[in-house]
Image (tube, rainbow, N blue to C red; front, side, top):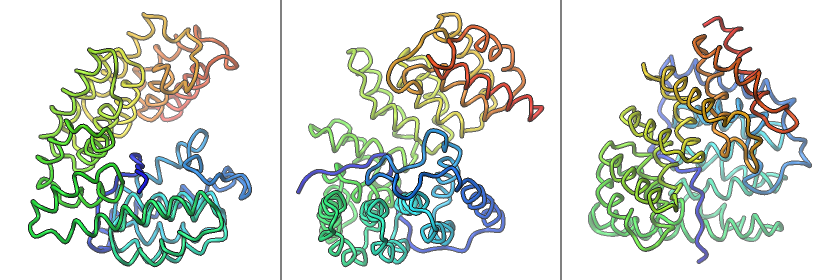
Length: 380
């Protein structure tokens, strides 16, 4: 079976769709409304690619954040995501399928199985990937059908996911939880095993930490991502140790930086600061993305200090190549400051606006302008 991994979609397995608490229900309704209100900006149906590129990004980053927050609300958000999965636009349906895969668990299987009949290959592709994260035999009939899909990308994804899911179901036949975990850890190069291990929580953490030293790079990446989803603080130091060693060797292993950046526990804060201090732009990117979501009393001061250091180095004057959000940390920190919205950042942002290259050479100035306007409008 070909090895398949989709590390951006590590999920926590659900055991059933619990009713949403009142505050969660209100937040879910708000998030769904925000997503649906932006449909005019979605790709037209014929533009949506049959690939990961269908996920919201770029000008739709705000929608992606709303979708990710819905997925983090887990089981209570399943009905809302199922509603989005029935939306009129292909772009929306594809992203809703992705988010259901992030939630995972057998209760997502009925909606996903129904969407396996979607007329759009882009949606069927995301459905195929998400079905593996149900970790349920209920997903197999839909995957079997998609394994004969007319579109080769959908067909290949379904075949690979089906094999990975069957491996997980086989591992779950082992006698004790420890034996099941041991077998599943060796399968973390594929997403369904990561999803299933996340459901074991702290019980799986020691085996996953040990797997960070595995000879298989796919297993290492899967173990790191799964530890991030579980969020047990025991994993923080081992993840940082691995990343730090790779940085010293001049060969940064970004999978460890990404895991720390996706860690779902407030205890990650000191390690996020270490990522910022690493001197590596892509490593800093993962820290900044997490800081945008993680409220901390030190957050504004930390971000301002980081931006001040970048300004002193002249980083804001550079016209970066490649993916500028990951290459030029000034671009990323401006985006985060817009979300944080603290007026103490205004002088630094004004300096960036005054000295950064024109917009046709770099996205830094437009992002700084947007951040400054957002803060001023909020009046924080």
